[in-house]
Image (cartoon, rainbow, N blue to C red; front, side, top):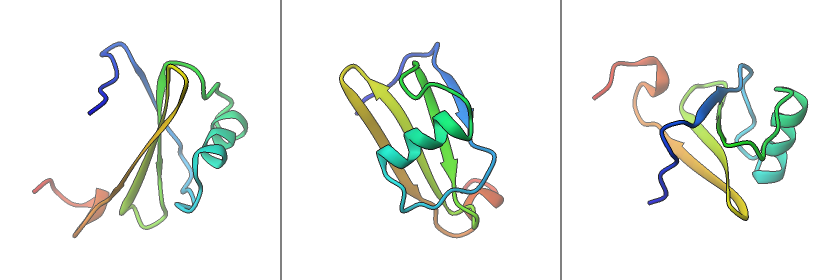
Amino acid sequence: MIRPGTDLKIYLCPEPVDMRKQIDGLALLVQEAMALNPFDQALFVFGNRQRDKVKLLFWERKGFVVWYKRLERDGLNGPPT
């Protein structure tokens, strides 16, 4: 598994995101909605309206990496299990 360094900045997109968006759409959101550079050494976090899906965007050396997680049960609203 790829693990970013500990000095990595993490940015959370405040608005819900359509989870059908892929790398190009997420990178565009970083640039336009968040006014940040998607090529920076940072992790960009996106969630959907129901708060049960999360996508992370990260630039690594020569390409983007996207992590996607579908949360079961209570999503981001409930206690950890």
